[in-house]
Length: 382
Image (cartoon, rainbow, N blue to C red; front, side, top):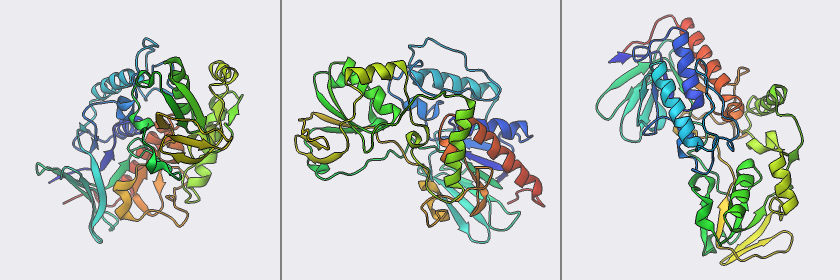
């Protein structure tokens, strides 16, 4: 069985950054580490974004280390831009990406021996044990197997859309969909659509739907948090600090908009002035034909679009029992080390779930993993 030093789960922004820095720190592709990705091709979660989310409208497209992100046609779909860029990145640095390889679980195969990382198609990888120098097991459905001393989980949030529940929701006879499943505003031309959520995705949907000829209504639990601030490096550092305060206390991360607020851009100001970006308050209940809102309106609806965000995709780590009483995963001071399991590093969780922090978190995880590897008395063996 081939012995590895690290397994990276996920080939999105954070996972590719981690892979790059593992390589820069001396780990050899295929011989020392591999990257497991659930997708059919490059692009991470970006390859699934709706076509109308163009490059100029996407928030936070950040370059990966070592290869600039050249500005393409601003009207090109961001899904195409990022998929092309990530593919070029994987080729440029010859990263050892195995796909499709969807990880379904990471378990302790034996309390004294190893973690078992199992894909939903039957493949498995071994990646470490409870003994200080022992490895974790990873195996594929075609009988390939690896062992490694560390696992970097970079699965982000896209695979876990959040659907809140409201009274009467199951009785609604129209269409309900989540940001995860949105493709085009043109599908709703001439329809009456309620957009639920207080983040930037909700704003983009409302403007697109209005432009496509839909009649829109906007519902948020709290008044929209528009902020006329400068979104610079200092702002980003402050956001990360506030998010990290929660993860270091073992609390679940807040939603992105709770940490960042909404940028009061010229486009959004115009939307407010036109009445499109004016919240009607929270939903009181949903009816078979529409919804009753806090302002007393009871619009008839053809569709409800739940722009209600995502949660950390950590289901594959559930067997490790990482959750604290507060509901979150207790993270170390570096923001990527897991206190309950020192062989595991999380990126795309907490502050690094945003594109602002993902690249830096990938580097931090790689550095922490290599430091742990250097501290082991012996390399992984089988």
